[in-house]
Image (cartoon, rainbow, N blue to C red; front, side, top):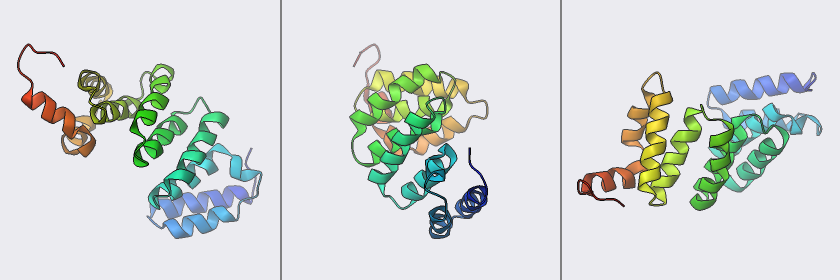
Length: 169
């Protein structure tokens, strides 16, 4: 359990992140006690700082810690794969996120990210299935708008545009 003053530093860091002030958030997080640095919310804030600074190796380590310390939370699983993908380790991102799809079957972000990784890996049938699943779960239709512009899905759109009717992969 996170106790004051660590809770104050964390809230301040989260506030700075909402404002887009990454350096200030990082400074607040540095004040958190050694024990407090392993709290899942602190790990998540530290991951956000690392990701925004594109320090993907550290982001991966922090997300791995989240998966270990809070396996019931999808954020660690998602963020670990985001870091892997950013480090050009998309096959690992795919395989590390697959168990999360079973663990969190109603999580739109898990399904969407699996669609993106499958697209990047040339698994177009699977990419299309995951994207369809994400779209079905998305009550606000945000997925469809994101998918149109997402460069990770460009290979899928190209494949679907060039596929002949009735032909498989």
